[in-house]
Length: 461
Ligand code: 4AD
Ligand code: MG
Image 1 (cartoon, rainbow, N blue to C red):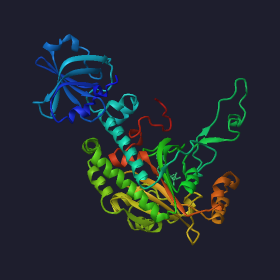
Image 2: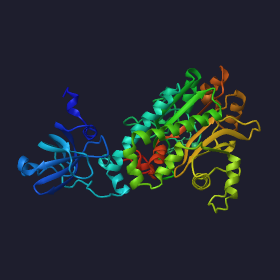
Image 3: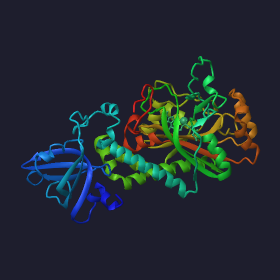
Image 4: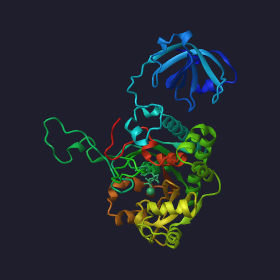
């Protein structure tokens, strides 16, 4: 097992420049077709969308020995890699030996046919072997690497912020509580499960506050980790557990922040287009016919930027009948986001300078004291992809906002300290990683871009 050469993946064989006298392939049987004394097997090992065609000759291998080579079984085969006379593939493996590593029970639910997304969610333990999910999770991996590369090149340090916290960074009350089971014999008494930390604890809704502390020492940092929100709204764009990318940069103002966000989305979109074109092709063929055009817009012209007031003005003048009437001071709803990105701008758009009443406490007030220097990046089909802001670095206005919102300043003493000890202007944002994947693939349900989704009522696997 020390010889890594034995572990050639199928993608390596498919990319071979010349025939090979002896090649070894291992994987799962995607399909088997029998014809005229031969079995044609499509073998996949997850390394690429395309599988390897393996030819099994009944005379040479014995037909009985092939009985267990069925859809879903795992096999190892050895033979010559030769140019394929058939259509659709350059190479095929003429097996001189085949070993079944793991038989597949005939009840295997992943047969060669189009299954619905709902059905496949019910077998999430097996769906990584389905074409679409293999492609998705390879893209997910690539997008994560591209994100790390982008920040690394710009001098951002990757930091790890806590998952268990004692504060609600967004102040929206969507926390999951963390507690310990009651001690045996003890009755149910309020707050008993909080004894471990000596105070109520929850899963983080955002690493931002801690990222800000780190940015005050390291300058440019980012987090990329799991985030938890107990949002009761059961929508195709919300998960209870999702991954967020949160950069935080000292000396960045809101314009720098938007440029950083736009650069990130461009970098990832052009990166997957060049490195995972095969996987993306599946999504433009079978999932979303408009995908190619949308990806072009992500990497093309500069993204639009409009103030919140302008955006509301556009919505009011649109002549559309919205369920929620657009109004200054009210939040921009999903239907409004869709109109702006899909009908009006037909591409990504930043909306900035929101009324303070609909945004969290930490955003920097504008001079009129009514708006905050917030920005959201809205994109077609997904809506809000990114939410960010310039932070309130002045101790006075920050304390006033905390007071106005009825929050307890003593719970944020450490956050407030950074404003007393050498405060600097700084900015950051949060990008929902699953929403980015929805944008890149056209998949319309968040449950299909994460291997084992957690949503209300769903905790299997
Ligand atoms: O806009 P949000 O709530 O911003 C923050 O949490 C800030 N603290 C980020 C920061 O400035 N560091 O969330 C950021 C993004 C959203 O734009 C959305 O893409 C995603 O996180 N998001 C979710 N994704 C999936 N499921 C959910 N329940 C989500 N809630 C937010
Ligand atoms: Mg937001």
